[in-house]
Image 1 (cartoon, rainbow, N blue to C red):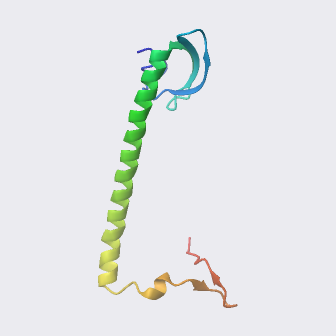
Image 2: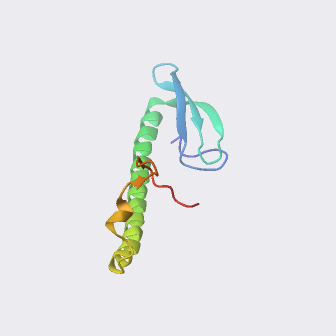
Image 3: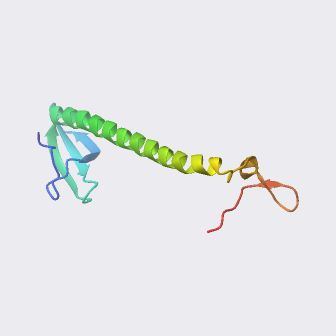
Length: 113
C-alpha cells in the first residue's frame, strides 16, 4: 500500500489533512506524520484511502485500549493508597467537605504547592 509509512521516519501513523479528487479513481492527499511532523502531498487511489481509513480505525482502537489500561492502573494505584489511609483512620468525612472561607462561603479547597 502506498500510504504504509512516512518517507522521513518510517512511522506508520500518517494522518490525512486534506484531500481533493483528481479523476474517477485518484485523490490528491495532504498527509502529516505526527512523529516527525513531515508534511507531504501525493496522489493515491481511492482503494489506498479506504485502506488508510481502515488502519486509522485500528489505531484508534489501540489508543482507546491503552487509555483504558492507563485509567485502570491509575485507579488501582489510588485505591492501593486509599485503603491503608482509611484503615489507619487518616481520612474522614471532613476531608471531603467543601472548604468554608472566613465569610462562610463554600469555595474550592486550595492545596499547598
